[in-house]
Length: 104
Image: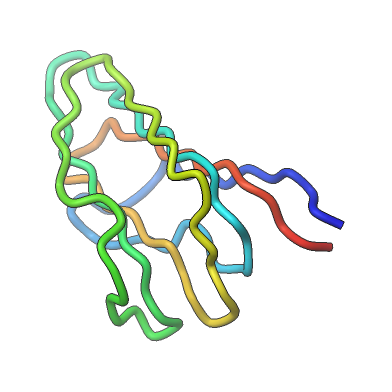
């Protein structure tokens, strides 16, 4: 049975890849928010194996202006066993949200 699920990240190390989704799932959307009041944020998203080796770029560096957000509808990215979605932001103020489904 497919069950809706959200994964989110608000605390991270600047300019460092962070695991956000580490379980088998199907991703529908990414929401990337810049909550900073005075700094643009550069966001990136990638698919990796369980050792952190990049398999594919999902979102190349994207600058999101101060107090703005982007919702990216990817329709369907399948994250398989042993794969992760990692995210990165260059400065403080970023929030990441992935919405999708898991098979339970």
